Amino acid sequence: MNITLDEIQNFIAVVDTGSITSAAQQLDQTVSAASRMLGRLEQKLKTTLLRRTTRRLELTAEGQAFLERAREIVAAVERAEEQMITRQHRPAGRLRVDAASPFMLHVVVPLIAGYRERFPEVDLELHNSEGYIDLLERRTDVALRIGRLKDSTLHARPIGSSRVRCLASPAYLARHGTPRTVADLSRHTLLGFTEPDSLNDWPLAGPQRQRLHIRPTIGASSGETLRQLALEGNGIVALSDFMSRADRGDGRLVEVLARQNVEFRQPIHAVYYRNTAISARIASFVDYLVEAIGENGFDD
Image (tube, rainbow, N blue to C red; front, side):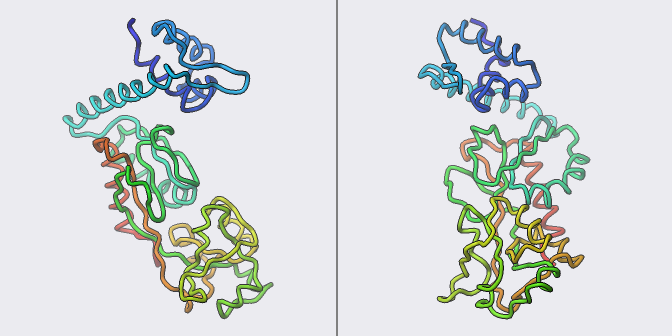
């Protein structure tokens, strides 16, 4: 039969991306080559792995069964590679990292040069996802998540925490006035998240002394979008210190209702699957983040 690893990886890429075209782009090959490789795999297995319709590709029962084994094969090969690299005491290979856009832009990206200087043989792929993702489906090695974790199948390592503050631009406050009490917020434009709604719990005391839950006047799915809206003078926002520190430092955003702030810190974790031994490259990246964040922190 002589199935090759390239054929297996091509099949997984087609499933994960949802199309042969996207898989070809991900694997840096032509669409025709990816299609031929998939066809050869099905011929060798003497079965149909994917039903092709005009709109999408759909796994057959045989395809689903083979996909599970295919992922195990690729994982085994990667573990073998990591073991050999570990024996040589130098992390190497591809590391896929996922984080929300604000954390990627304001925390991870500034640290990449230092990490690469220390571990030049690690090839990085950086992906942005505003919500939680399936690490296996997205072929992600480690995800950086902000807030409370719910998925018990994931191993989590704390890498820091960041305080949340209510902020606005001087231009907005000049036009609309500065709120002096929590009740004053009812007369202001509030910038908040479309989802998850829990991110609209602000670090202010509500009627029953719980954190104030706001209904956004303007909503967005990304914290970076909300930051830009606030910078442009569109309203008041609650942002984590890791993404607002520079703005507060140069006066582009100022804290409001500081005396009413009931200190709330968002925990930040690096997560990966419990049933997978942590690789040298994941360990090197997470250790570097913990070290860098521990030295610099997010707060003033």
